[in-house]
Length: 376
Image 1 (cartoon, one colour):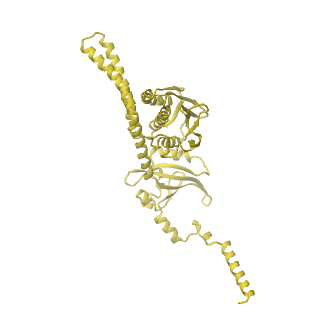
Image 2 (cartoon, one colour; image 1 turned 90 degrees about the vertical axis):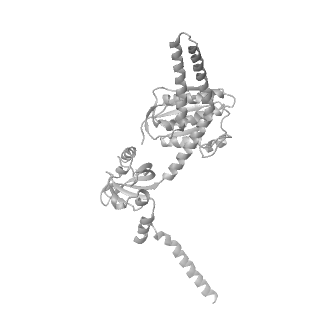
Image 3 (cartoon, helix red, strand yellow; image 1 turned 30 degrees about the horizontal axis):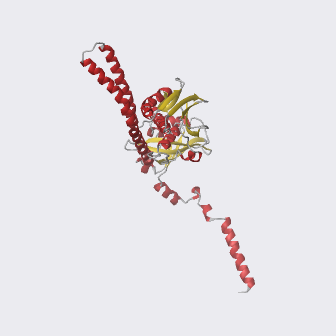
């Protein structure tokens, strides 16, 4: 083969390669262009649930993957209201989100009832779209089962709650021993036949109520968290937390001060937000090895309330501030590294934010920002 023939062959090869690059085979395999046999395979074997509903919530289309997730056959659900499968809270949530047209897709966590009547957690990406061909607005969703993920999260939260309860036990025992000692002394006086019995009875009742308050808050920590949001008085909620933590603070020579407007309310789940403040105030107390003060300030700002927990400890180094919300990252020798991560998750689920600052002079500030009105 002479030089000219070799050049011609090379040019033909290059031209063929350029044609392939201009029309890569992968461009033929958009989902809308897949052969019916492939689409049917995806339909039968996919685990993400695809649903199309009208604005009344009636199911117009649901993928066969509903059998894997909920145990229903697709044809059983055509024409029903999808709201029938959701908890009452989630029904209100969806009605609120899609009452007005929005081109933005939204991600929501829903509790969906399967064929056995058990509710499972699912994550849905939902959009309201316009079908121009039929001149109709439709709600389209892609949903995946996150039950295992939710159960793992709840196990971590329970583990952290029990860890916190154990750490507070010494302070609580000390706080309970004082009123028990008083009650014992008054009972001995009464046995001796001393007068002024009514006055002593009243003092003993007060001491018993102190014990009851402290033990109730300690038991509260170990209970599973609920998911029951309503308007709560933030000052009452924080006062309960401080009652529980003040005994531990005394052991460490730390004073806790609160400055809040009694009328400030937030839309929240009481048990979850209490857990957040237990974690944050406890961290603030433990940050001060040589004693000091923790200040809890609150202020309302444009539809939200900001609660600052300020300590007088050494402060958090700037280079690790961004790591504090990561799982299992901790600066404490005996810490789990879950408290701040869980607190951050709870605040975000309440449509709020957790911000962390190093104070200019000393100590740190943990700021919880929560909406003052109901938000779906």
